[in-house]
Every structure is written in C-alpha cells, then in structure tokens.
Image (cartoon, rainbow over all chains, first blue to last red):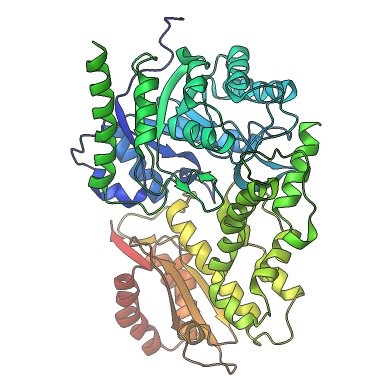
Length: 285
Length: 248
C-alpha cells in the first residue's frame, strides 16, 4: 500500500445546510468539519458579497471545509465547462477547502444540463474520457481532485467491466482521490445484484480520502433510491464497519438533503457512525 | 456503442413525454426490473427537478394561464428552452417570453405581466443571496450613504399586479407602481406605491448619496409632496428593508 498521506483525516463531519446555519455560526457544535455544496455558493449573478457565502466564510474561520460539486460533468462527452471551472477556482481561493470532489457520472450533453447524476457504461472509452476530464480539472485547480462513486438505478448491456474495476482504472490513470459513498455502494449492490463487500475489497482504498453516509428509500418497483431524506439503515452501518477496518483513518461524514432534520438529530446520526467505527476498531484489537 | 450516442439517446428519453419515446435496448434488465422502470426512475427525478422547478416558480401564472395541461405546457417550454447551465434556478428565465409567443386562448389578459412579475420575484430572491458588489460612486464626507437592498426590483405596470397577486380579484386595467424585494428571513415582498414614490425609489436605487439623489429630483414636483415622501415614505421603506441610510 502506498503510505503517502493524500488527504488529511479531518475526523467526523456533516453536510452543511443553510437550515442549520444558526446552530453552527459561532457555536461549539462537536462536529469536526463541514462539507459545502459548491454550486450553492457560486454563480448567479456572481459571488463575493453573497449572504450564503459570507456565512460559509464565517463558519470557515472555525472549521475545516471541503467542497462537493454536482456539475463538473466528468463523464460528459462535451468539453469541460470553463466558466464553471473558473468560478470553482475563485471559490476555492476564497474558502481554501481541504479538498474538492464531484461524482463519477454525466449530467448533460451538447451544452444542455439534466441536473441529474446519470450513470456511465463501464467501458475503456469511458475510462479514458473520465480520466482525461479529471486530469484537466486537476491541472486547472492545481490540486488533487476527489471522485465519488454515485448510486445507480440502471446499468448498460455494453459495459466491459465491473464498477470497481472501472474506478480502479480511473484512479490508476489520474491518481485522484476517492470519496467512498458507503450508502451508494449499498444502493447499487441491491439494484444490480452484486456483493457490496466485493466492491470494497477491489477498489484502491489507499486513495480514499473521505467517506459519505446517507439514508435511502426502497420503491414499490423494487429499486433502492438514494434519497438522502432519512436516517442511515443498519446495513449501511455494517458496511461502514467493514470498510473502515480496511482503510487508513479517513474523514467520515453524513449527508442529508431532503426532510432535513434538526441539527441535533442530524448530529446524532454522525455520532452513531462514530460509535460504529469505534466499536469495530475496538473489537479488532 | 459510443458514449456520446448513449448520452444523446438517454437525454432525449429523459426530456420527452412517455408516449413519444422508444425503449432503449442498451439498458440492462436484471433482478426482474424492466429497463423502462430503471430509466423512468431517472426520468421521474428529471421531471421533478426541472418541470416542477418551473411549475413552482410560476405557480400563480399557472393558475391564470388556463392551459388544459400546465404540466404539458412546461414540458413543451423545456423542450424549446432546455437548461443550458448548471444553475437550475436559471431554468425558468425564458418562460415569460415563451408565454408571449404561446398564449393559450383562455389565458388571463394580464398573463404576460404576471409571469414577468413572478420571474422578477425569483430574481429578487437570488440577487439578495448572490449579489456581486459593483464599483460605486464615492459618498462625500458629511453626506448620507444609501445602503441598497440589491434584491429591489421596481416595475410600472398597466395591471394592479399586487392585488392580483394577493388574490383580490382585481382583473381590470389599473396602473400600478410596484416594488419587489427580499429580506434576510428569505421572504420576497411585493408592494405598490404612488407614481412619485416609484420615481424617488428609482433615484434612490441608482445613487449612493442621499444628498446627490435629492438634487436629481425634477423640480416639477410640488414641495409638499416631496416633503411627504421624505418624512413618511422614506422611513417606511427603511422599516420594510428596501434600503437603509448611514451617516458618515
């Protein structure tokens, strides 16, 4: 295993939501760090004096922040959006995040956006396109980029490899970081019938810099949907325990985007994750 | 199959109504879940995010548009005006223009003005939270600085849009002078003023110094009317959060 520390362990964090600003600004929260959704703090019609951004900068004085994007379109066949990259770079200069991440997916084509995190076929052509885009982003930002495994509800007949092989190929080509979303692995394993543990056993864990946890829902049609609107289920916590024992100490966080609970309930979910990890590591020794 | 071909077909599937698209054979069927079910989970999410975003942004316009199927109307709008930016808030921007060219026969007479008002309210909200500071004129020592609420939008209209907005059933033509603005509590407000009040608000909006603003008021207005504005309306505007004053 490569012993180089690629991303610092920030401890236990939460996804930052404006609903909780009042609970966080100037308060002692017991949370180690926060992840901000990048697109909320950049763009229309510009940033610099935004009320949201100024609150983020206040929080930044007390906590490490990481930036999480949804619009890089790293699996897209269009050229990368240079305006987006420019605005992202400006935000990075302001916020000084510990790192920046986005999902392994595509979001649009021919300059049009779906605003969805759409799945990719696992082919050599896609590996090359995604890797090329990541390299361009890393060069533009001057930092190692982190990519997250997205949950998926459909797969492709023409895929040539498994998802974990696809991710491994990309990491090998780019040496980017991995944001391991445990809930997404679980959701996809149920939707596509593979063993979540096999996934974890076969990805380049030395590049994992962050772990995501969240809740999901089962639909009547049998699909699990990554809704981020409820507590984390026991199966995802079990998978967290399994994964965490295999990777170097890594930053862990909980995200919640719909039916957002009180800050205390949100934090309680993070504490559950902390206990799962602590108990798992104690049992190992 | 090339990645680009797949993406073109999937994007088309997502953005087209069910009855108009064919199944995509390159999507895998597994676990007894049909490819249509799998694709439709994305389609539903796409619809919820985009169509419902526009429907919500123009919820009052939707009522007065009197379209048989507002959902289909928005679908058609998005087909002609697909999202070209990663900022989803921009997706509704073109709807007033679309309504201008695609007005249902039964639509209210003021529908275009109402749509413009609803978009102005959305813009006001996002301007409040995302304003980029512009370079300003200097305020001389001793002058009173006007601190602007950058979400403030001023409109003159031939319809009483504030009354229509408040469901007062005022559907006859009547000139209105409106201000739209957002406050820290994330509320967007709409209010009507007199013609003179709107003129003064426009001047206040474009000046940084109260004294310089007063100098620009045309001398055609009666002194007592202007006195009334600065003694009664100005404190009210400050109280409502349209602007504030700082004495240097």
